[in-house]
Image (cartoon, rainbow, N blue to C red; front, side, top):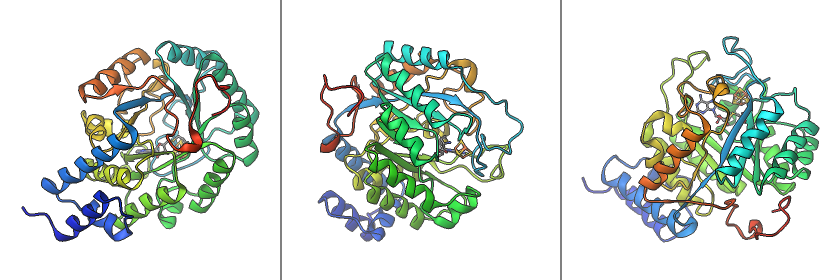
Length: 363
Ligand code: SAH
Ligand code: SF4
């Protein structure tokens, strides 16, 4: 089938490095399976190669608490879900997991949890500081919406990056799916994080009910406007204990297309091949690595807690221990013909260049 005119025009603009409009982005997202999709993916792969190289950065996640005060419609950790066992990993176990990550050669630890107000900002900051003392890690924090003072304490304790996905750029949909919260407040926090000097990560889900191609184009443009250092783009996966239990999961091909277009629009942003895309399809992460992704976030949580961190069901790796997850991901990367990075994998943007030997508390 010949390539459509709109698609061809938009792809040529992307290839020439021209700025893409919302309409161009929609035309690319509509790439038909077959020739159009393969050309889009090939260009994204080339842009990734030119800007980020062939190394894949590993970010080891420790999911230290599954308590959450929020009630997001899409997430299994929502407070109304009374059918899951809640846990908080004792500090010594969190630190042991980080020590193990150091032994495995990790350059980044991601501390993730539900929005758990049991932890004060000072306690979270102390956890960050303790981890920074273990090894030459970059620490990414992903604990949701907190106060400016809390973000500041964590930053002062040495946190390098913060991940706060905008989830959807549609303000109505955002408010519906995250009762009691607004997109505007989330964006305000992303601005604070930027001002505090964090490397900022955001991102969105693909396939939320009510989402359109135009919303997805807005998601990509919002990531561009935020000038993020990292963008987590993964499919929505329904959880049986949430109000969205009967909604279909995000489509694999659409997720890969959104990722590929994000790579064209954000050439120097770290883009993970998400656990969610690996859950949707056994080779999902390999495919994502071929469509612009250059990061993987292996789960390093102790095995006994994993099944309780069910943001969505059957999460890839939920039955493994940290060593198994690590080795599986290393072979996946090698099979994809790529190399495992040994450094911290800071943002390649000029202002975030990291020089070995610098104080590890600062970038
Ligand atoms: N509580 C924090 C961090 C943990 S949730 C927060 O919400 O920011 C981490 C991510 O999981 C969220 O940003 C969301 O994008 C993703 N997520 C939640 N439920 C999901 C689902 N059903 N399918 C796919 N991703 C989901
Ligand atoms: Fe809580 Fe985050 Fe899940 Fe929302 S997405 S319910 S804030 S863990």
